[in-house]
Length: 293
Image (cartoon, rainbow, N blue to C red; front, top):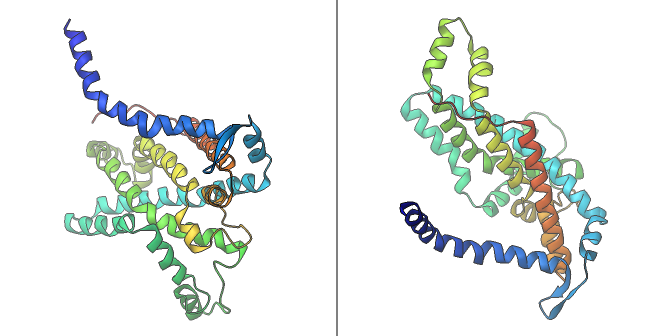
């Protein structure tokens, strides 16, 4: 009887959340799946076309190229963020309290900056004439100015830099929380055994941080593969589609095409790609049960 009563109370408490989940998540998802099998616009009733939209997306070389470009973009952004976050977290852990507070506030500032503002600032930095980057390289004797956002070889890495800048702050604080959760007694025992800094990092820190690193890799790849605002503001996908990331490709089709079934199908296929990448990361970086200190 008591168990039934507890179950009823739990369902009553979860009821409002389940209703909101159904209205704002499940129903839009199911409706999007239905639209992806239809030819539909905002002015006409949907017409069922089966797998036609998915076939069109899968056979579209531009969509495949945008996904591959997104994976390359993620490969630039996510590992760099994780490495910087790990180094910064160790730095914060090693300094005094006041200095650590200043460092944490400093690294978190990009997180609260609008992506539009960040894109404008970095566009000014990359400007061909009068840009801060070309000016600085000129002081070092680099020679001719470079159109960082105007050349296909440099545009995607140039867009990756603000993405790294925006996401590193949150990743650093998460990494720092994981480091502070490791009992100091482990390091003290290792010091008594004569272990150096490298041994401590490879035998203690990294193994115990595996779950944190796994979380940052999965969420980082998901976020970077869905990046939209920065390339939209900085390059609009150019030059020659060299910064046309998957979400920007879908956004362009959604706003320009008369029928939205194609863009919805592309979005759902991108969702499948994200799930596959997450599964691969989980497979490569096996999570472990947390160890109580």
